[in-house]
Amino acid sequence: MKNVVIIGASSGMGLEVAKLYLERGYRLGVGARREDRLQALQQLAPDRVVTQAIDVTDADAGERLRELIDKMGGMDLFFYSSGIGKQNRLLAADIELNTMNTNALGFARMIGEAYRYFAERGEGHIAAITSIAGTKGLGPAPSYSATKALQNNYLQALEQQAHARGLNIRFTDIRPGFVDTDLLNGDFRYPMMLKPGKVARQIVGAIDRKRHVAVLDWKYALLTALWRRVPRCVWRCVKL
Ligand SMILES: NC(=O)c1ccc[n+]([C@@H]2O[C@H](COP(=O)([O-])OP(=O)(O)OC[C@H]3O[C@@H](n4cnc5c(N)ncnc54)[C@H](OP(=O)(O)O)[C@@H]3O)[C@@H](O)[C@H]2O)c1
Image (cartoon, rainbow, N blue to C red; front, side):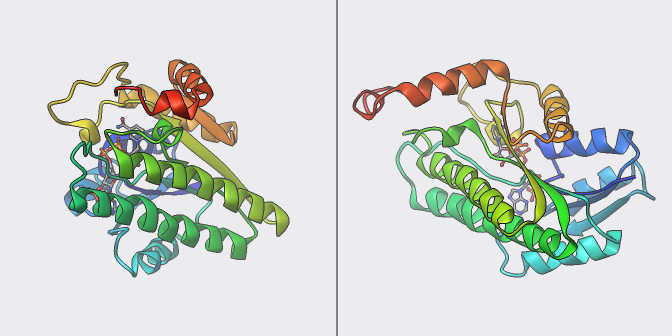
């Protein structure tokens, strides 16, 4: 039986992945801000789910994570699904800064704490949902695309650092395209929308196979491979 910690388990892909791991019989430590949602998840398997209220933007969120790990008696896999994202075509300052706070500072805080835990323990696996949005700067969502690129690079940097230090820590950077979750709720209609349940199964498969990077699904893998080839002078004229 594995001990899996999932931060961002209160909705969307984090919740779907949590349900899949419960079906496997794993023990879960789940964190997010909405405690009622976490408690509803706990009701599915009360003896195998431990909850912890965590706001990743709080300075002491790393300590809350350590408390959760202690309550579980250890952690084998850290799965990170917390994040926010909004279109911000008029560059409202609060949206930009909140996104930076959650997706950049919160991400570094929580991934960093998991890394330090696994470094002390000698082994572990860190998997995080980033996004295909980190592939290029996206005009409709500047802070979202910028923080997703930061997340991609942060995981890559930690992977290299862990290797240099001889630490047996595995990393999986999961980059989905548009997924039908609360994050995208709004008036805007997104193309090529994926179902969260199906994406969750692909995420678990990528973690099982210990993939370093998984772009989901194959259509988005193709799309982002094309995006990467678009020169800067053309990209700046693309209307998204
Ligand atoms: N939906 C998409 O199209 C899509 C595509 C690519 C990548 N992603 C990424 O996938 C991840 C999961 O998003 P989702 O699509 O599953 O949306 P979601 O249903 O809105 O889930 C977001 C999760 O993040 C948690 N969260 C947000 N702010 C937090 C904070 N300050 N502290 C702790 N937890 C926080 C939320 O929990 P609480 O509100 O309860 O705290 C929730 O559990 C995000 O990183 C998102 O950027 C989404």
